[in-house]
Length: 43
Ligand SMILES: NC(=O)c1ccc[n+]([C@@H]2O[C@H](COP(=O)([O-])OP(=O)(O)OC[C@H]3O[C@@H](n4cnc5c(N)ncnc54)[C@H](OP(=O)(O)O)[C@@H]3O)[C@@H](O)[C@H]2O)c1
Image 1 (cartoon, rainbow, N blue to C red):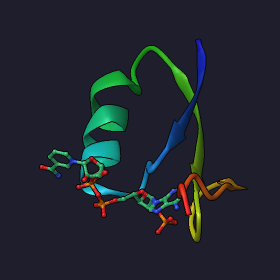
Image 2: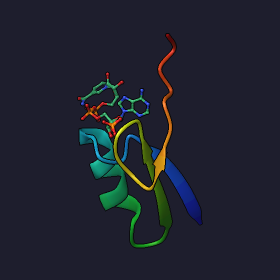
Image 3: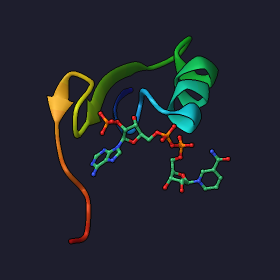
Image 4: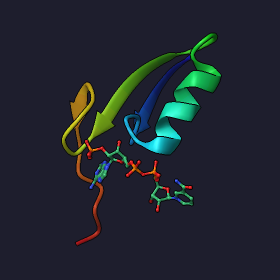
């Protein structure tokens, strides 16, 4: 499965990728890092 991970470079994101990378493909996203730039802040 192809999965978009917002916050992939963070502490939790790194663990999620490590746990799932064997079986899945990732697109990483963050406000300053990753394959895609997204800002999910509420303000
Ligand atoms: N670590 C814990 O033990 C823990 C426990 C309970 C809850 N949480 C919550 O889980 C979330 C992630 O925690 P974490 O420890 O992994 O944080 P972290 O290490 O600071 O990583 C945050 C990640 O989110 C991205 N990010 C930050 N602001 C963003 C924005 N406005 N839009 C899109 N991406 C953004 C960062 O990349 P960029 O810098 O490129 O944006 C980074 O990849 C936080 O909301 C935290 O409060 C964490």
